[in-house]
Length: 192
Image (cartoon, rainbow, N blue to C red):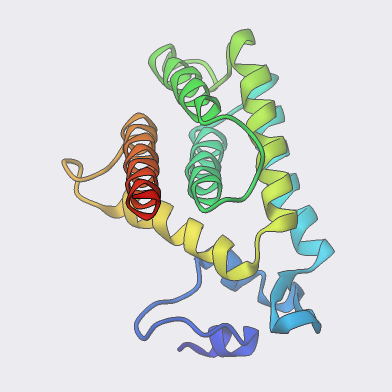
């Protein structure tokens, strides 16, 4: 456990560390008395949300850079992993839709122009950011850290091992179907 990790009181498996952004935000993380859960302070919630919304604003007003788009992409992956863990109310299709729209922004980028989102990408991206804002408010810190770590591990994986949002959505749907099938089989066995 690193000094900043122990300062937060977060018990992580040996060799794992907090996501760098959450480690930087360590002074503004506070512990809540109920059930020894750790939550982000209001200042940290605002900071995380504001960072995303400022990046979104830059992309909407044609003042974006690769950093702004990358921030939204990283948020999309973290939000997906939080959603998969049961945090947030939305449809799985939101992630696929935003992924396609952000991909279109990458494909339409011209070297001499700033990064920007097309008009049809604005509404789905805004929904994604609203979802992430709600996840920040409801997910425990350990789940936020886990989601960001999973996203970071995916980004750091060799290119042939990285999973796209489309692959993650497909895998999640298969896992859901498999779990439902097993639950039905257990119920059928109990009824016999």
